[in-house]
Figure (tube, one colour):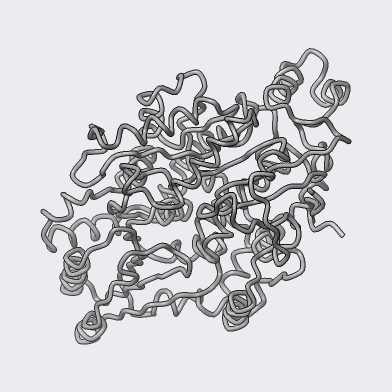
Length: 523
């Protein structure tokens, strides 16, 4: 049985997919004189998409939730990508998926049964009609010698696919090729050692049928590397910006019933200031020490400070948590509290709800910043391994969202750090909820919805609503856990953790492609 639940019950496209509809149906859908019909047909022809009824096989690269089991941001981005691909290509298709660290000789999962693996080698590229990748924040290494293995392998597979003439879609692409230490985001520079990596990537990107730059800096480097400007869509925003940022009463009440998200857990009755710290990339001992001192300075001006050190399982954190065993003791002495929690839920809804109950979020994680904006809570974003957080702060354009570079962080005293946190916490939250920023970010993120700017031909609000209902949240859970392993919001945190451990122990991964209705008989 299909597990597309409510997805197509309210859509005109059925299970065919917009880019596979016959011309006559396009005319019926849009009207004979509407430009959308012609543009959809042109986009399908450009990527050589087989029509409805014909066999369609795709190869998806960098499918990140298959690589990190419980990363909230990556799972949310892939959920949005799945919804988009369903709308464009429909459910009647088959193929393969490879995580970012995979190679053509590694085991690759077929779409339905992740526990059944096979060696696909280069035959997967040859058999696929379409290659799709969402590199997210992958492409930021400086030189071939310092590139992570996943970067090298991803570029190798993309290069091979375009070399044999396969249509390539690159959604949500961030390209920050330089050494980010000590470089200002507003004045990007690259050393000579970074140039080969940049030109290699740009040469591949130039051959893509659909290319979306995730931010201004990425578009700058794509053009600087030689990608023709007219071949780049965007700059966009990460696809997570297409998630709902509001909850209806029923959904909000259900999330609030979860044990780890109860009001007294997040905000104890005596707490006058709640700060959430999310583990970050490229952290340092000196930074953690300064953060501890900043928290202790806040204690002197607050009735009670409550610090939550949040470690989402699966996050690629350097230094993991704050590792400040003395912080809890010191806060208790000053009528404050500090606790670390890590739960297996990767649901964006739970993270947004958690953040919404805090006064300020501090993190070097890009997705933590984006979730903070979804939650309308102020955020101090610190530099990680790229300038992607700086690019997002620039796009948000609000005094409630600030960015600190490595250099600024080193030069800042704990007193200055505490002053910034206090200032952010005093932000008028009701104004953030009605400032129109999420509507603007969502509009920019739509560049990731369809090639040739076809997003205005799709009812994106119907596909990805702005208000989360229980149906929307259950659909996301179905995507996370696969059709055969559905866990509702009624389940306890202990049940979820046990399920996560069982999946790891048994080697199972989620059947997100079965959720999409895609077949297993690709070869």
